[in-house]
Length: 516
Image 1 (cartoon, rainbow, N blue to C red):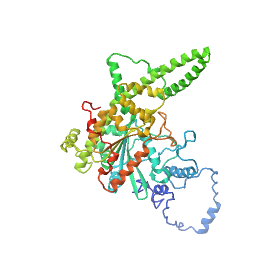
Image 2: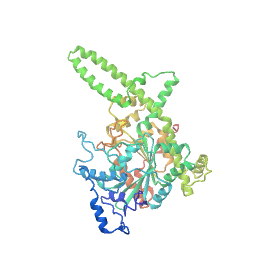
Image 3: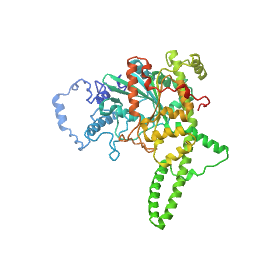
Image 4: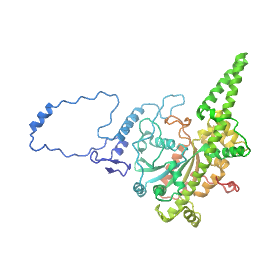
């Protein structure tokens, strides 16, 4: 097998003279390997060979197929890539990728690509030594990181402006990321890497303070990154602490839940039922006003059911959000530990630390460095912001209950619901989770905050990608990343990109807020 330095995939040199992955991405056929002509077996004449061939039964031709077939010799993992090129050619004559809302056609194309292989230390060294700009993507397990990466890859390669490895695969479902993978985007001679870190493995590394043999690969990934992008679920990040406090106070007072959630439908089914009841209540009220006696009885029944479901939705939301509070706090603290580790690795010149070093030594070392901040930029993305801007009463009622006494935060979330492009993620985070805002501000020299939704309106629990769905914040983030990449390649100081990083004024720093 031959290793391709461009796309980091392997291919058989016996079948191809150049990399078939790169060839497919560039829209051409791979060059077949030159094979030596086979010589006839000694003692057998050419006439005997011809007679033998004439006596052989010719193979039956394959049945006609309307679908294009992948060329012979390609691995199974490459057949999907060939089919994708056919899909792209067919889609060129169709409507744009983002159709109006009323259009029912669905463009489903999850980016699963060929069978991904786990990154290793040697590959990371090659990536780092190549000088290609490298960004590390990590996210809380429920932050929708896989959805976001799919949208990012789709937007960057739309119209073949970028070639992305691996290419898009045929329709299917999104699976949880379990491996460290590198995705390379190219445009002519300019390219960059996105290294994907699974959220669960990041949390396991945090438990071990990123130290030890088991976390060697994680340290190399952190060391290879030149910029970091962390996805945090918007609703859980902003509201989980409030929900946790509500349930804690109720338990301390000996109170019980007003509604038993055991008999309620799942969250998404409950939201759909509440919306349907709202329409039925409106129809029954009109009929009752028209003098229909039966409609009056029906109206009372519908109103009671809707009120019961709304209260149940509030309880469901409180329990879901509160359950994430502690785990989310550990994750955010882990991001801070990663920042300290980055400082130590920069001082030591590499990720290969002394095996005897422990977490306390890392922390002390960062303090001895006069609390230096990593010079690598950090983008904090509050993802799935449509979970906060959903128009259903079953979604908005829990938010309004939690925001009682927080008028500034309520105003900021109203802006997010009405004009997502104008929402201020930093101000909202500072209003509802000032401890998190302060910590990130102290950990990183350059930090940017924004809302983003990769697929607006996706039902909770859905796994099928529909690229016709709208998205928020992703385009702005792509522009910022490309500016960052160009800045890094020209070896300029980050100070020239201060517009990308929102710094908190000293007057806004809370003095009494506790860390999460």
